[in-house]
Length: 181
Ligand code: CTP
Ligand code: MG
Image (cartoon, rainbow, N blue to C red; front, top):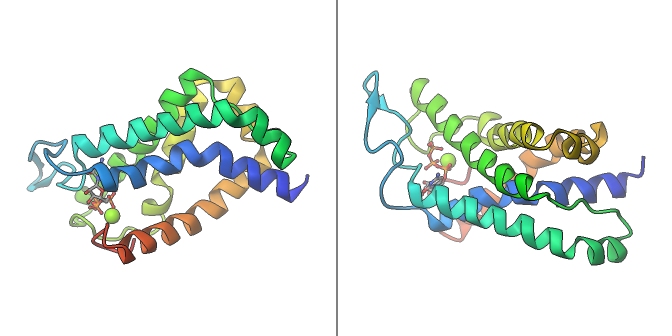
């Protein structure tokens, strides 16, 4: 299979799952999702997971999915790749899955004694990928299998951690994030 096609498809298909985490950094603040509740003496999720971040991240991801779907036909001609469109169920569920993955990781981090912002290698980089893909698979199985071929999935799993680290270093350098991971 053509590497160019697979890489372009992977990036395009993952954009609605990539954007929410970054949008949450910009939108975040205010009331934490766990409302300050604790479990076993530690916060359930912590102050890094807020309602505003969740909503802002989700809305941003859905918007990206809808915009990409609108421009997919022209984009396909331009790039010479048959770019995937996002059915409404996927446009709604995929970014939500990304945010839920991030929240699940925070839950796991708190249970393993990691304070807010502590690094958790691999989990930090892939939490949102794994959960968003699972949610998309459940929401639209045939769309998922058509879009995320084994080659595309392999590129997603290899390239996402690199992109994640790069965007977080950039957000840190711009003063948007407290830690570069
Ligand atoms: N954020 C938010 N709500 C979310 C996700 C993220 O408000 N649902 C914002 C918070 O300001 C958070 C920042 O985005 O501090 C960076 O997100 P992340 O790295 O996921 O959170 P951390 O602060 O590192 O906390 P954790 O250790 O729980 O991941
Ligand atoms: Mg963090």
